[in-house]
Length: 73
Image (cartoon, rainbow, N blue to C red; front, side, top):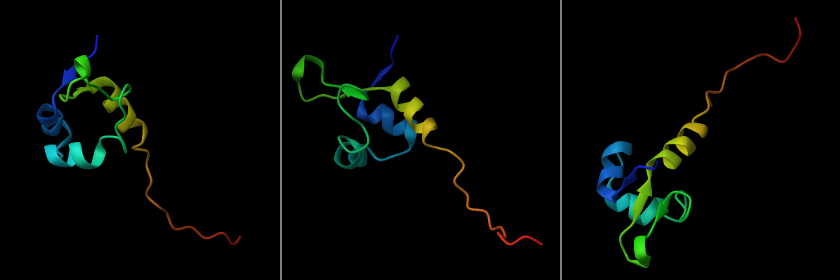
């Protein structure tokens, strides 16, 4: 079963402003049919929390660069 969230509810969970979600993330990071739906082809957007959470966690790999010496001692 999916958890559907409004823009304001998603904003509370991911700590982004609602306007940022609508103007910046929708259609660039969050895609219709995968991350959100428009019920009855209306303006209102409902976000699918499980898919968003899975994709966010999949992209949060450890990306800290470590300095190392390639020369053999």
